[in-house]
Image (cartoon, rainbow, N blue to C red):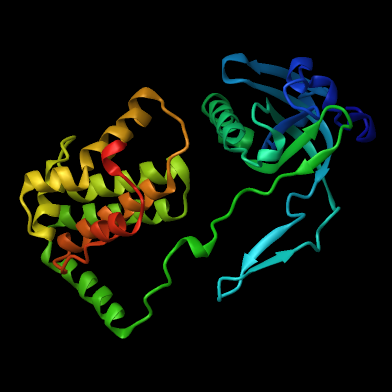
Length: 321
């Protein structure tokens, strides 16, 4: 096996020339992983270059010593008041890694100054999943970094993944009455059948996962939470029936007012037609509000009309989804 210094990875030469021309400054997206539990003695320096042409991703599987910028170069934590606190103490640090690495590359198609890297992340995440499906979870076990990689200079600039600003959400309701409502909700579980309890528990788990997600991922998780909670099959009528009871309106009025069918249609566009596009955050917030209305009804607690309040306060036109 070659010495560590001889195996230092040089990734510039693996970038397709045409990719560099798509960006004004010759920059491509680069995500690094390290495999685990691999017998490294069977490898030379370069293992394989895998072109996933239709996905727009090139994967370089290389054994060697890798140096890359610390992606924690700038981190942000929020104080309890909601004010951001930036940490630059790790700026200019370099991480080192030895072993079998997978470098996932994809070109930029949007201007670098846009700072929107969701398209690149989505393409790479699909390629990562494909490797895990065929080679096993440990082939991409350790995520090392997301980087903007300049073909011109060879410089790797760390990319910090987006974070949720607390200001996007309402202030929490810290009141004894609210805690009492939580106790009442939990105690009501004893009145349900085992099937109903399991569905509510599973629904709440999906709701929790949705709260920590963004974009398409959040939308699908909120929908799964709602479907698990209220639907018996693929028909949305039970949701409309519950909303009609919550708001004391007819089922037909519920259909035309809340447009749950439109949300179900969007879910179908994503799941069945492979649609991947930016989803208005207000749509996701609205779906969350519908879930909360349905959840309170299921738990025997008076509806707080979250969905109607959201439609009133926002500029969202659900009928045009």
